[in-house]
Length: 196
Image (cartoon, rainbow, N blue to C red; front, side):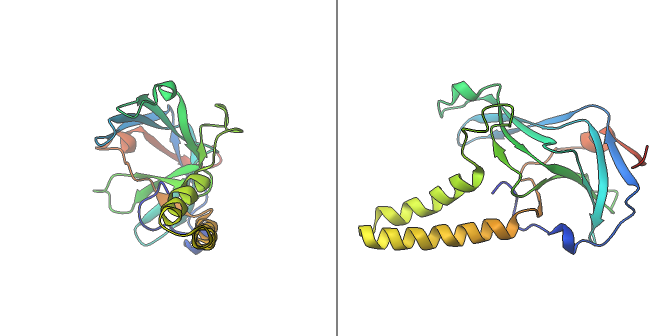
């Protein structure tokens, strides 16, 4: 999963003024660096309209255009993934969460289950979905220390549990683990009515 702990179903949000919208006149990008692997990414929200889609006690969720969040690898680090440098390694439906407390900066959320490894424009048809990778990472360790029958049963149960968790989270909104620092995103947003 790419989101931090917890997510919320859009069906559980309180209604909000659906004419409220935010516009990113230009795409907005920021960087993430993973010290352990040395990999650096550019994370981007595409330009366009982000329309209010519900609120909770702390703020409003503005849903963006399809595949509005892109992650591009800019440095391969020590993992030897040089062939991915400069390519979109993830695309997802997304939005912007704006707190009612003006002292808090807006945050990026993604729509769980809309994640694609490699953008549709970059070999998505042959790339594994994130769900498959998550399932493999959970099932594989059990299989290494068990008999073939235990591994098969444990693997099937593990895969079933993981798939149930993934299905339950599909469509939920979850804050992305890496957020822009500082006021850059807030300053890039223009408030408008959805019909404009």
